[in-house]
Length: 251
Length: 328
Image 1 (cartoon, rainbow over the protein chains, first blue to last red):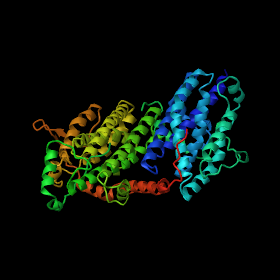
Image 2: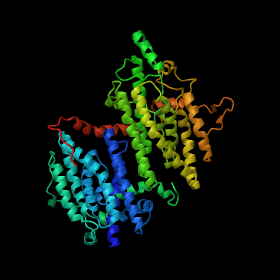
Image 3: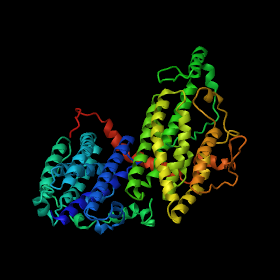
Image 4: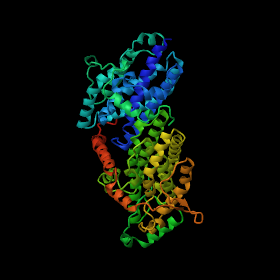
């Protein structure tokens, strides 16, 4: 098994979950209704907990301990896709991002339940259950708001058009793509993307939203090789503000 | 939990004259026997009004209280603190949800309560009108403001209105975890570097006066609320609550080696009660009436959240052609 390939996969997943969890947590106290405030907070907790588990796994194969990995790297050392670092914007964008990302994430963990890397397969079997609620939440809201008022439909449609190219960046391939596939660690980004398109189409087609033809879109790549928007470094600065006062201190 | 420190202004008892004396006697006898009053039971208008006011104020304190701590979720140092603080603040928002539901049983819709919060008609706990400058301020709230709230809420949970008591029982159970979390954070600051100790000492110096204010004005100057005590709406005097808090937490603060910024603070061995410098009640009044360091900011954040979320709430009300079964 190629250790570098495994690390690359674990880092990009961990970084995606940490950054999106952080963004979700920014809804605390500000949700459009209390119930959504609470729901985004639950998903934030799950995602950050999942990222923690992945950083712990990385530590077992020679990487730094989780707090150091998460709180001391700079933006160009993060491998998350750019979709997750974008600011929350209005609720329509946050919801669309949650739908697009979590649909892919749920499918990814399903695929990983068969991973040849047993610790990852075990974690996947545990996390699949959590993800079920995330996609249930996303699908329910997309169906509700995607069929409700002119304003809700038009807001969701605009956010969908904006977010889709970034969402395709989830599937940016790594230099180790063939290695992870041939070693049975993960079925690969292409396979995941095909499943994802089928799934989001299935949900969107039950609403009044239109899914643009995916092949006509230009994916936003770069996140997986450390190229980010200007939004990531300020997020990391904020996240590590207290930690950096004294990284050797215990808090 | 953030509730407590309710302010009871002078109440008008005029409406009592028009209440049915037989019903009133039966109502008071039930409360005296320790029975709970339920939403469909007969109750005097004044009881209903004061309970709505109190539960609503408590619910608002929960959502406004989520703001000063919530702002530290994105800055919490390390995974464990980040996850715990997210869960803690989420609980507080959940408490607001429970409490708005309890208040709704008395006939005031949640939307109307939130409108009254935003337009300044109803109050929330004064303590949240102060800023959280550092991580240690956030730890102070998690430990000591929550501790103060528990003192109040354990008392209120023995009150007479069933739905409020049941909500408080659930809330207190969660609060006890918050208290442990907050204490744990402060222990780490206390046993950490000099810088960490200084951070907490400074936070303690800043937060002590609002903490003393938290339980409400001294009994000497607060409004007479005998009837609310008889009806078990208000369960203890402000000074009793303050004294209980001091008795439980001053020794714990001293044990960690911190000093409390009040040279007169000491327990009187004869009376068993705490003596302290009289808090500045003029400042309390000024802040509760809108002129504190963060009042405008807190309400502004809430107002913006409500405005930005309006289209979502409207969309929920839109009639659906058909009920869509959730997928996945």
